[in-house]
Image 1 (cartoon, rainbow, N blue to C red):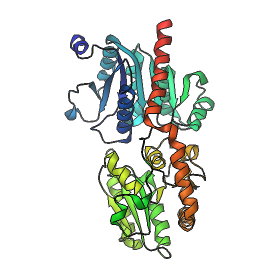
Image 2 (cartoon, one colour):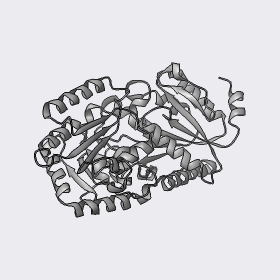
Image 3 (cartoon, helix red, strand yellow):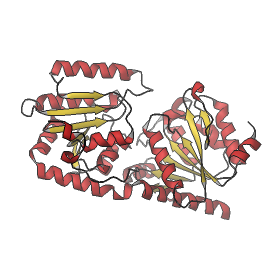
Length: 391
């Protein structure tokens, strides 16, 4: 690696971002892209340097505003750290998910952090209250080597303080960003005008076993006895890093056949653009989030549902409990199709309550909009830069 060449490519003051980015298809890539776009489209004296996680060495490309970090190349983590140290980088934002980095539980990121000599702001997208063993060690080391930490909810921040004894002075609560969208009633959406369904349900995101879609199917099979004219759209392709996702989709298709739901369930088996997904959400009445993992501490899909002003029926996983309540939807027990069915029937039967939830959900995310979230990131980053200069 020739530092001089990179210095010529990136001569301006920089903020470095370590994450996945498009063209990778994942929620984290979309999150990071929106953050960078909104932050650096503002009056900002820094330019972005994107350190892009690559999962396949054959897909590595030269990016105009970034460099590649091959997930499994241990030496590359150290090279990237040294490069950032030599460039005019004022701060680094690490978007942290365990499985995007190499090594067991993503421990290779520690090689980069150990060699880095710039202020680090880490956004933790996964915060479980009970990490143990090597995963806990990696998590604690990332937290220790971070100058500041962002949690996506109050609950996430509480866990960092109580369970991992991270100083409160390090922690900032910044919500998951969402697009700034107009409010559109289902009946006014483009797609809904083409359909003749009484009720439209939707779930979205990469398909994998932890999504709990089977419980939604059991609930809807029972609903069909009294409310037959509905459609349930399941948006999203198989998770690219979960081989079991193919088996899971086949399992769900067999369930649909056995339950007689062929006319009531539609898979959209592709990675939709944000605009395409929003069109489907606008056309829906109720969004179903039957996730199985109680520890899940973020969900861009759930945040997007609320940004579109749609009531949610969600299981009681961490993020849903942190941002949702009976004013924006219904929180039920996990792995309980009867509870899902009860919630669905309640919202179908009570249109006024459903409409009130739509309005409340839409209003609640006002401070989650990307321009506001990006401004918070910039404030925190500038605070780290100013502190670093004074030390």
